[in-house]
Structures are given as structure tokens and as C-alpha cells.
Image (cartoon, rainbow, N blue to C red; front, side, top):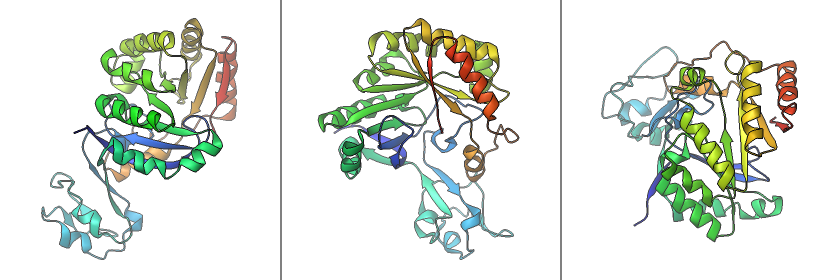
Length: 300
């Protein structure tokens, strides 16, 4: 019996997670708590209830379905007491508008491959493939290993997007992938710990080792105004990338979609007043990385 993975969503026609048209598989669970997290629904290692109050038509189906008495009336929608909610999914099954959704589904590698294979024609015609993201895929190393093996046996290009925060025994799984998309967030360890909740020492060690042992590592720098966009940080990250022999880097400008998701999960957004970086700020970061002899690709 193979491992099962906890998946938050399978995104089809993804175009920002590697070459071509891809299927992006977002695994649930992440050891980091980045202030700017774009996918907060992937942080926890258990299924979670996501509420979209703007879709609620106040039909009452959820109240009748809930055996835990966690749902009650409110002004514009039914309110949920998350301390009583068991994330069982009974209310989401009956919600007619998708106002309630349970994020997190168990799946095996063969089951996942059957879902991915539905988009094979688009992947093959565009030079695309499958990208495992999250969350942090390395938190589910056995499932990731089985899924990568299944996809590669099926002739599909594979990529893994990772923060690199995992023991090498887990990190080594990505050696099976055709491409590794490796996030680098902050050079200064104190800053990294403050804005992500973890040290960057293991991350940098794994980055250097992967750059040595894997033929296709693509570093990515999320650019967050007021957090990691200072000249010292950008230059330090650029020098680390150049020092391991890599010549290309992706610059990922912060966007605000994570704010709404955090609210729908009943969690506060830590960057509620931060706007995406300006064109001038992106251009400045790009020039700084180019001075490290890097080819810079700016997403979106």
C-alpha cells in the first residue's frame, strides 16, 4: 500500500510554475509562517474550513448539517465557531454556492496521476508538465517521492517548488525532479527568522548542495516591500546564487491574494497594509541582481 498525500488543490493550466502549461499540485503543510504567504490554506497539516461569506445565501443547509453546533446566525451570513468546528466537511457537502469549502483531500500517487493525465495533451503540446508546490512538498517526502516516480514513469516533466527547509534526507527526494524551483527569501538569519519563523541556515546549506548535485535548480526571490527588498538583502542573495554557478533567477513580486484567503480561514493577515512592489522597486531589484551577472526573469 503506497503513501497518501494531503493535497489542498490541483490547479490546471498553471503557467507560472515552470515551463509550458502545467498541472500544479499544492500539498498541504508548511514549517514556515511567512508574513506574506500567498497560500495560507496550505500551511496546516490537517483539512481546514474555508469560508466565503460573499457567496452565502443564508439558506441554512450548513446549520442543519453540523452535528457539532458550530454554526449560528449572523448579520449577512452564518457564523462558524472555529473552536467547535471539526473540519468534517458535512456543511461543505450541502452548501449550494461554494460559500463553504474544505481544504485538504487525501489521495494516492496513482489516483493523482489519473487526475494529472486528463491534461496530458496540453502539457505535451506546450512543453509543460507537473509542478509540486505547497505549502512545503518536502513535509510529505514519501508521497512526493512516489508521485514523482509515477509522473516520470508516465513521461511527464516534473518540477518541485520548495523553501528548502527540510532535512537532507527529505530534500534529496527532489533529485528525482527535472526542475527544482528554490525560494530564497532573506540572507540575514535574524531577519529570516523574524519574517518566516525559521532560521535560513538549513535552507542555504540545502541550496548549495542542490546546486552542486542537481542539473536544473532555479532560484526564486519573492520581493516583499519593507520586508526583504532592501539593497543589502538583494545583493547578498544575488551573490549566493552566482557563487554556486547559477546564472538565472526569478523575481516574484508580492501580491495580495493571500489576505483574502487568511480572512476566509479565520486568521489575521500579517501584511494587511502592504501593497505590491512598484515598477520602480522591481526595476531597482532587477538591476541589482544583474550586477551579480545574473539573468533576471520578473514574474507577471
